Length: 301
Image (tube, rainbow, N blue to C red; front, side):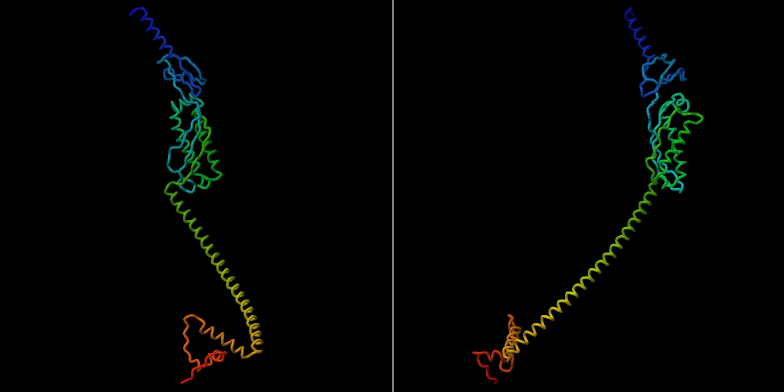
């Protein structure tokens, strides 16, 4: 190997060694420097840092941002009245002490999330056991979340601190299990159907009352109108009779003739009427026979 090749190889080795001693800590992370498997230093500020090359020192990173843990367990919990409910919740938490976290929890965020899930579920179970379903969906829901947050905080700040802070605990859903939910829906549907039938019955009864009242008013109105009409008609007939009597009293012969004409009109004035009588043997056609210019009646045989 010539002199220039040796120099080039040496430069590459030096660059490699230099690169293994440099590391960058992002503003979203903690940098944890290990020396022979033990935590040597924790870098909390972002920037370029130095360490010994492997295997003397190694570096790992832990997220320092606000983390969210969502519930993944669908096992039902028991309330104070022994009702089985399914809940959904989430927890907002962050790592504040990487050394305590690594010693007591694990090397990454997933280890903390796994253990935190167990603690939060146990806290919810304990608090829900003390409350009824009605309290879970009422104003006591806020006190439930506050109590769970307090219990979880006490657990992670205990004899062996986890090195994390619990920022918030929220209960997003509390519902019956599927079998109970179906039964509740059926009861609600039956109750609504009962109320609907009651309203229909009440409405039908009121409708019958209104209809009966309207029919009664109609009958009364018609009867009153008929009574008034009969009074008017009676008065008119009486007045007409008086006028006819006065007029016909002046000329009885004309009155008889006039009534005969009305009788003819009523009897033979319609199309298709057939009347079989003997004009000479009845007084019905007397007015016609006595009319001026009328033909004499045929002699009876």
